[in-house]
Image 1 (cartoon, helix red, strand yellow):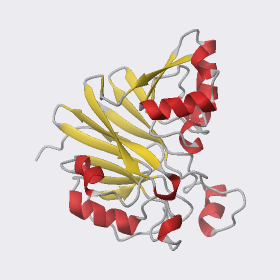
Image 2 (tube, one colour):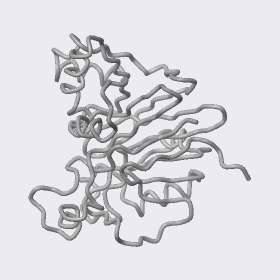
Image 3 (cartoon, helix red, strand yellow):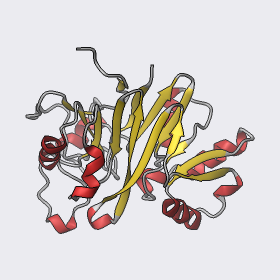
Image 4 (cartoon, rainbow, N blue to C red):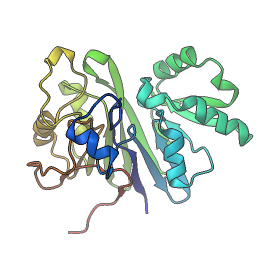
Length: 260
């Protein structure tokens, strides 16, 4: 059975934020229910593993899994919270005496080459602009609006009639960008706050209220929120419709259609 496991569900700063004494950050420092590493997921198919994104929490996420290898990576965009673990990943590949595989759109790979010109000693970039087939999954990439932070990529996964999208960083998607979100069994969407009060021009990720409006339009069978800031409190009961929830770290989702 294929599964998706949430290794991290935090936003770019993670939770707690070092400077913050809000209720959520203080709870994260104590019981830890709201403690969140940077967002990343693990797709498993049999013995095959694929990591989506490699942020600065990568090493600790691998320790939690008991993982001593360096599975291939699929990168959404070249922002630090999604690629800050690449030097550590490349060093792991060096010690394992093999080249790592990093799947990424060509323009994202070009940015990574400029940021980390030495990494290709130990890893190889593979373009995904024309799609990717991995462990029977057909994976399609497309560019999405990331607000004031420019752009990101989202990925649509299809296998044996099951359809899933992973879109951790987006906001104000236009009709073309929303088209791959229709007819999904699972949509994983980034939402920083339940209701964000910052000016729209300064923002880069949907809030939950906006994400619910998007979901009402594209109608996924299941909706999970990731990329949560300290503006999300997992001890609070939010008014979410059936089939919608906040992803929690360590949560594993079977990727199969439920029988009627």
